Image 1 (cartoon, rainbow, N blue to C red):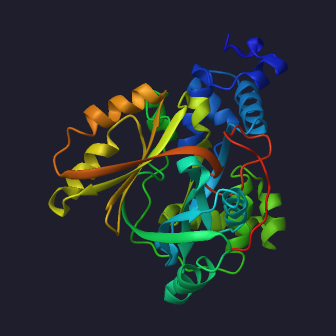
Image 2: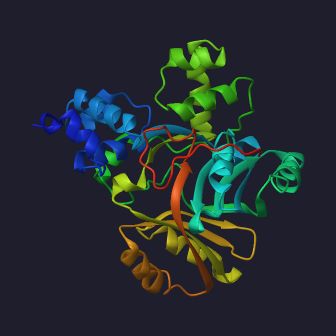
Image 3: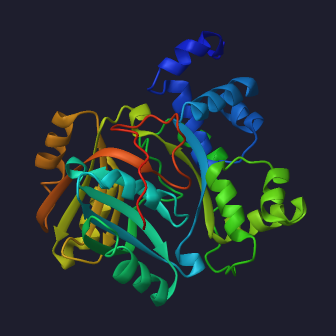
Length: 350
């Protein structure tokens, strides 16, 4: 018995938190996002029908998606973390407008709904200046813009998982993990890449026929391009999971000031913390940014006053509780996604 008989449709829709088998399936998909369900089922010791059914239900509920994430560095792009302070009546509309841009991700509302955090990718000085110096500052009811260039990632990307705890055994993970990319291989952007990435942001498990229709390429060309992008490390697949489904109700972004001599050590230490979903070095007065996920406010308090407080070299920490996630990696969150806060769909020029 693999437990699939216990999954009634109504009970599954009402259940928000992932159970043990769900977590194993999601961990497997994070490692091998496009692996056939039969392959994942073989490693997990369940039926392929169970794997397929559970993933489709989780995806329909907005809890889990497989998405593609192109490497900004591989395509000559810079990653920026933006902090936009807005008037309270405009924040949701501006966040939604940013979310519709294809080069944005991880858009959240924090600080009582008056501040937006957003990761955005730009190509070249001209595009960066246009966005940061002209378009965003002139957006109505944006009071201030602070931009921080991401310099190094300590935790995040293809080798990380927001579940942190190993749902799979080491042997199972090793069976599914893709080979390490060849960093020496270089890829050049091709016409059709943007359409390919857009389709894979909507559904990382989209079929080759669907991807061929989106790009105008043949299925053979799609297969060859995906293989090239993955082998070079220019793109990876990951399981995009709602924190609530993993039991993480309290989500916060920490803006940390670290003495430069301690930055690498602190970043690497924070990356090992089970609460950490992302950690990266950046420019600005706060040179380390982390996203942490805790079960509740008490657990967040304990983390701030014990684990991270014990690290040498930290001079200050600013904590920004996340009150709503508008966009994670890739495409806009689907309408049925579990999100905190209001669901208004205002429009603002960005």
